[in-house]
Image (cartoon, rainbow, N blue to C red; front, side):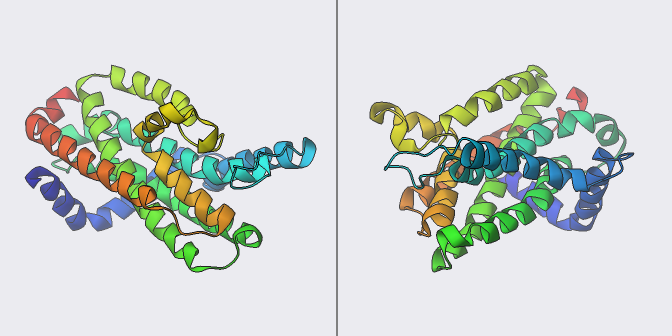
Length: 266
């Protein structure tokens, strides 16, 4: 894990620059618009608000007894907001090195800085939204010790998003088709997770496939806390830790092989 550790130390030494780049990243995305960076918060809020309005208010749809809640819109909002954050971090993080190729060729900056910038920019937007969601769901979940699980779940999600985005960013630098494959994988991945439907609705013999999606256990954790007021089950913690270890090993190998060629690929 030597190469991963070197990148972590480089990020820590450049933490002030990382925060500056993150702020510029957010401001540049919405430059020229009247609402500015507020659009970063308004877009996901409008989307999850539409879910709630259509499914809970207009159609008044209800789920079966095995679901963590009977209200469809209430269920969809809890899973869709973390999923949007994950997709945003992955898509922008995977293309971060390609987009910053000119800057990396002219400056001796750690490549991890640009991946971390994209993931951190997503966190700056979605962490406050998750706090707002938690407050809004207090009448459903109640106030309990289970709420303390939410910061841990957010940290796990951020760590997985960073490692996976870094792996994909290196692969995208070598093979540009990676970005096209990622777009397809994210569009399909929501169906291999309990975001749109309870995991109990998935065929028993095929449920293991859901854990090929790193967001599956995390979404289960958010649902347990916000919909049931319960501490997440052991699988919610074990599966992300396995993902973290596997991604760290893969990333370490990629860094070792690409360290001297990465800038040339860009």
